[in-house]
Picture 1: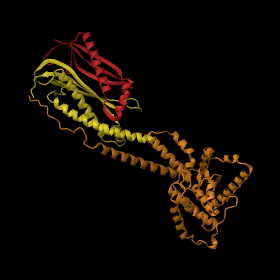
Picture 2: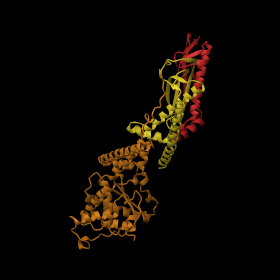
Picture 3: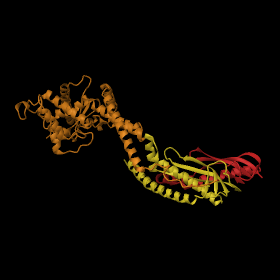
Picture 4: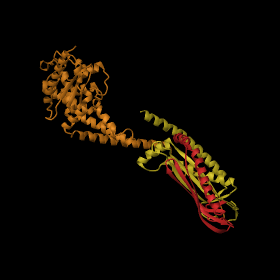
Length: 151
Length: 104
Length: 289
């Protein structure tokens, strides 16, 4: 019985804090994406037709985002029935966009205005079976260049 | 040292190919970080400790790759890729590899 | 060439659904499915348990009888022991007669155990063992009422209710522990040891009531006193815990109604207070009050 009460409290805590954190994170992502709109990013392998300074450097950004108790519980339930795990969709979306933003941030710091050959790498971080730490890491990297492309 | 993950550097010519260079590191997180991560697992949010750890580890892997390239006299590494794999519970290997070249 | 970096609209990669809505729907679906599975399996295992031979039930009872044995007798002095044996023999005799009235199958043997404790209780458990407490006998006025209790417990044994209840309980425990990962198979063993806490369902109780009533008629020729126990319990308003006669039982009032309904039928040949329906008194050694 006490187990159930503890699970219920954790669910409520996870839901309240997790949803609040997610909303806050999405707001900040949207705001910062606006700031970096002028930085061109491409997943093409070769630089576009344009003039470039003879400068190039690897830029990258990574983020580790943890699931909250509610998301994990809901996903566990979903596992029994199957279907779209909506609670994890938003988690991964947040992680990817955050990683891309951090990559752009680094590019901006180095004075780059274009990033080509952007790649994304996603890996899950878990530990042990019982005391599980559930988190997802996303690493975004690409080559920063300085171009004379006009928008 | 120029490091990129594309195959050419705009406006520069490759004069010499020196083959593959690589750098890796295996890192483990300490218990304190795990405890914090355990809490975060209830509330959700970014695990800053892990992010820092992985970023440092990648930097180290890239540094080692650069050291290799330097040792063989290259001045650029092209087509760099990363790979991450967990070796054991709590430890991860970060691996970076690319092609060392000499640019004119 | 023209390069642009237009803003991509939000919410394409994320399902726009309130997370709680999906969660509650899932929770209800999973809980419902589990409940149905548990119900179906426990009911079918209960039915299967009736097919277990009675000898198997007896040997099962032997193994786990240790905690409900009669060694209380050893602590009594000589006169008390004599009385204890007298009561036990009387109850056993009553049970044997009622067994015949019940037309109990050959292989089922009833063993009555008398417990000299002031608990208002009687119960039937695995292997045809019936336990009757002095406290219950104290509140009864006639042998007929006591016979109703004994006949009721015999009916439980006749319909194999103890082993059905045990298998249902064990299967529910097993399924739940499998699903939740809480506990392990070992908990079944501990459930087996809680033999005395077998709880019968209402339909089982009603079945036994009707059967006991019919046995009473074939033994005494009438059913006077059948509802005495329920009347007494209703008045005294005892709160009884799981192993006891009335817990999980239909409310006393409903049981009396049910038996009165039967009275109106074919067995209404003796109206109350008529000469043909004398109550048999309890023997002196039982009549404490």
